[in-house]
Length: 391
Image (cartoon, rainbow, N blue to C red; front, side):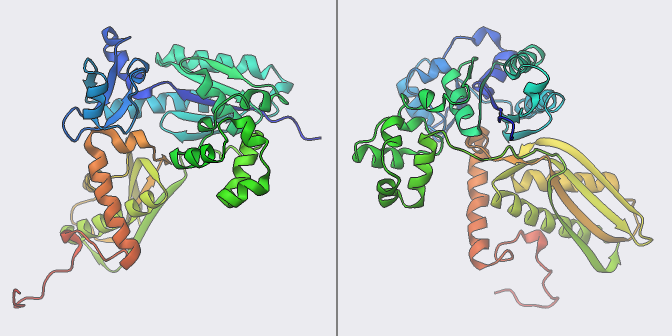
C-alpha cells in the first residue's frame, strides 16, 4: 500500500519588501514599492499595504504612484535577496529529505513517510518557526496531498500564516474559491471561463471534460483536474550540482591572453543563451583550465542570481585572471553555471535588469531563427585580414 503523500509549499511573504524591512524596520506598515520610480520604472515587488491600493508586480511605477501617491519607493538590494534566499535554502536543506526550489523565495518539500516518525503537521510548523527565527523573514505555508493544493493553500494563508488541507478535503477547500485562484489561469483563460458562465472552481469542477476540451483543447482536461484537486506533479529534488556548461579543447595550445579571453566570452554567451532558454538563473559560476601537461584546475564563486551576459562575462574573466598562471599554455577552457533556479517575474523586473534581460532575449530570438552565431560580441569575431579594404 502506497503511503499518503504529504507536500508542503513554503513561500516567503513579499520577499523583497521583507528583506528591505529588516534594514529599515521604521517603514513597517507603510505602502512600500521595490522598483524604479522614474517614467520607465516598474514595480518589482510591493508590501501588502500597497496592494490594498491595487498595486501589483510588473505594474508601471507611474500607475502605482497614481493609485497610491504616498507610496514609498525603494531601489532594492539585489545581493541581499540572493543572500537571504540562500539562508532559507540552507535551513530547508538541513531539515528536509527532498525539496524543490521553485524560485528565489518559494519551496516545495516532500514529507511523505515522515508521519511514521512524528506528526507532519507539527514538524512543518516547527520548520516555519525556524525560518522566521533564524532569518527574521515572514513565511507562509500550505500542506496537503499535492503541490497544486498546497500552493493554493499557501496563497490563502498569506500573509505570514499557514493552512493545512487534510486528505479527502481538497474539493471542500477548492470549490468555494474563484477560478482566478488556480495557478496558471491567466486573464485570458479567466475571461473565457467567465464567458461560458464559470466563475467558481465548483462550477468548473461540475462542467464536463468534453465541454471544457471543446473550448480549451487539451488544457480543458487540465483545468478539470485542477478543479478536483488532482495533481501528480512530483517534487523535483533541488541540487546545486545541476549545471549548464561549455568546454573547448584547442587545436593548438595557447598562452595568448586575448585569444583565451575571446574564447571565454564566446562560451559564456553560449552558456547564458542556454540558461535563458531554460528560463533559469544561475547563482554560481566556475571556470576550468587544462594546461599543456594535462594538469586541470578550476575555480568557482557564488554570485547574485542572474541570467545577464555582461554580469556573467565579467565574473568569468575575473575567475580566469585569478586562476591562470601567466605564460602557461592552455589546452582546454570550460565555463559552468550551477546553483540553478527558475527565473521569476520579480527577478526579471529587478533594478533595471529587466531592460537588459529583454535585450538579451531579443538577441536569443534572432539566434533561434538564424543560428547561435547570428549575433556575436565584437570581441569574439575573427580579426580582419591585413590589407582588407573598409566598406
